[in-house]
Length: 178
Ligand SMILES: [Fe+2]
Ligand SMILES: [Fe+2]
Figure (cartoon, rainbow, N blue to C red):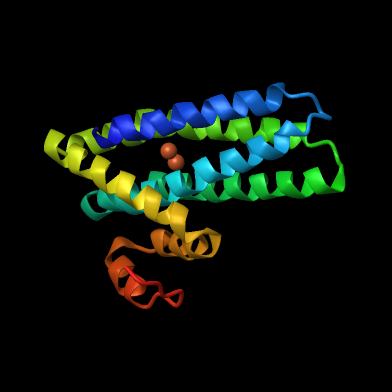
């Protein structure tokens, strides 16, 4: 599968989970399961997307302000999702936050599939897109198995200008066997 198909598949899954979440009754405990599922789908997707897809574009395309905005949206969505976990425990109305996450992510996904995909299609061949798809899948399962602490480090690395990324990765303080 090429990178565009891989990303779209995840986007559909995320949108579906968010629809299910906001359709729940305020008192329904199933939200705990759904919030966890959303986090487990969103975080590995975003880290792999940044390191494989965004960073490949940034390496070839000098104008990357749009990608930086997109990276910030990843952080915002994950922060809001953490708020949702807190609200769940504190027994505060979680619905407005859930709706905010759903709206923000739908907007983010739409932008990714239109503007960022069209930049990518100009610089990657079909073969490149397939290779990126495979790399994305591998990176996603790696992030899933490494957990949140490593994911936060990777987020910061992915924010760096492309020429620094490899150097900083070599300094990774959260070491792990490959
Ligand atoms: Fe995405
Ligand atoms: Fe994204």
